[in-house]
Length: 115
Image (tube, rainbow, N blue to C red; front, side, top):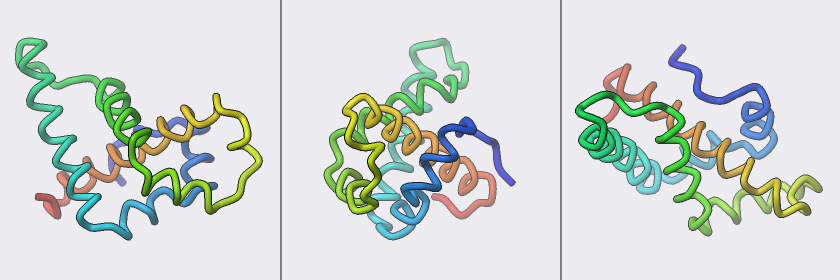
């Protein structure tokens, strides 16, 4: 088991909206997000003297990207959860998605299955 990034609440959102399935279903999109993780790790490291960036920083970058990704929004909407009726809850979904992607990326790097 890899490093845990998702909080308990984010795990609930991840499971409710089947976020790992969305990530696995689109190889090109997964590779795009994984490459973002790699590049962001390098570039944020350049800002802080070569230190590994905090997981939180990477999750926030990924959440911002997900908020622009219509594929992600469409996947989430198809789950028909009343939770989505409140605009403020979407930020929690994006954050859970970012944490889910970062967990999957770190697992893939640890197991040597990416790049």
